[in-house]
Image (cartoon, rainbow, N blue to C red; front, side, top):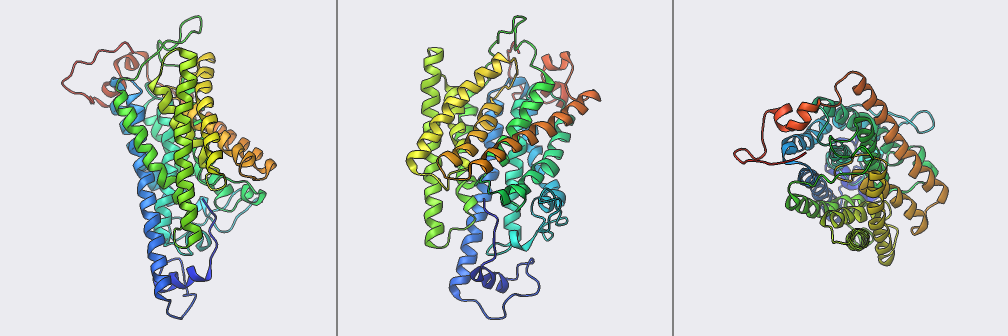
Length: 441
């Protein structure tokens, strides 16, 4: 995702069509038909990309629901819904102005451009984009960062506590670190490269989920007294598989859409290259995770292959604009290995992450940032700093928040409610009403 700069062609088109961010009009001359068409096509391209990223919320909802017990399905679906609803409102009033303030303070660590869409800097939201479509694209990213945590804390967290978390990460935590790069802040000045959010979106959410999983503790029965893990299979892998396919489709808005324009040969070529790199990395991650897990566990495991595909997608997201097709295969393949190792590491540490949010998004988010240096030629120091600071920011801020919620006694449900299931205990609703659901979880 680029920090947009005004260009003469963009200004000419924007002035005619009366984008609210341009006042007074920058040019009095009537723009050409080509300029008008370019404006319409680029805005439509970004709107479709925003819709694809929003569709990823459905993918996350299905993946997380399928990988967890049936008795918690309503709770997980509800959390994903509210990530979008709460996040969009708070990002409108607070987050967008924090992420794109225009004027910055404290050496590029902080700024605030005002509430709403009109408060955003024209240097970011203007150019060839109408500010409202830029907001739609950015708010979809904010919702993605928030919803990653839902799966990591599934099955034992109070719904009200989750709503507080979702509001904080969407309104404050994500926009502030997003500003450091995409809003022109200190990481951008340093030369840090994260094209579409391996770190700014995925590692942030993955490490926030890790903090939640640690503070909450494991689900009842997840680990034995000697520390050995017990499998708690998801109740519907059909939902999870469909969810991964939806996420793959949505990623074609996530990565290619971050080019922010498609008009012109350079932009068109870049969009198509990014889409191809995204595909190759996803498929490499899936295949390598399958093979590696098959060797380790002596059987082909669908959930490992699904997470491998997501790992490849996360790993390529930071660097998809800067690597070759062959390099994208390598990046995805390494992601497939890392996700399997990450899941095994969590078991060793007795950290319960029901969907593998940290191995997929946290661990591979870091790998994506480092791969931008190794394969994409981005500055080593900048990439290492960004690949360290963003995860620490997500983990540290959310660790403090979850500890505060725990201190007030509103973080984790009681044992009886956890065994009953959060659907009945928290919502008095059932995802599969009328069916007898047998579960040992």
